[in-house]
Amino acid sequence: MKKCLLLAIGFFMFFAFSFSAYAQQKIAYVDLQLVLSESKPAKADMALLRKEEEAKKTVIEQKTKALEDMRQDLIQNGEMMSGSKRRNLAEIIEKKQKDLNRTIEDMRLELRRKQLELEQNFIIEIQAIAKKIGKQEGFDIIFSKTGAGILYVNPSSDITQKVISAYDASR
Image (cartoon, rainbow, N blue to C red; front, side, top):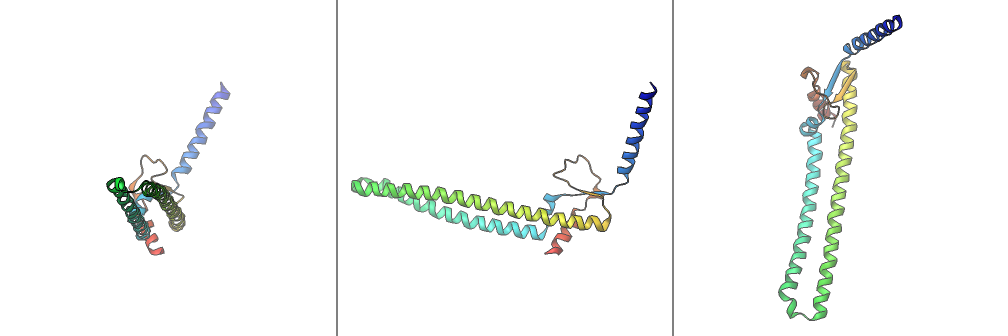
């Protein structure tokens, strides 16, 4: 019985000291989605990516239109064409369709790679800025609001605007 009582007191003391140590820590969080949507460098990077995506969509639309025109020509004039000319045009259409499919997939993969690269660079830059702010302001822990699963946080711990300002000033 004494062992159980001593064990219980030991656990109580351990948790009491542990919780009091955590209570003294200075904790903050950053809303990365907000930084991504409001900071000037992130907006500029995303705008460049969207501009590139639009240019690629234009190329796809042009190739799709040319392919559709060839199909319409085959449908409308196919009966008047010789058998070899009709087969030749059908083969060209098939090759162009395959080329279009490859182009679409290549462009999609390239855009996804560039987006991941931008996101990775963004995270690296934000981590450095958060570390700098953490050291300057004496924070013990800075969480990512969206990735940490926080259920409640005191709004006074939000340093997102400071991170946005520092990020804007960094470039």
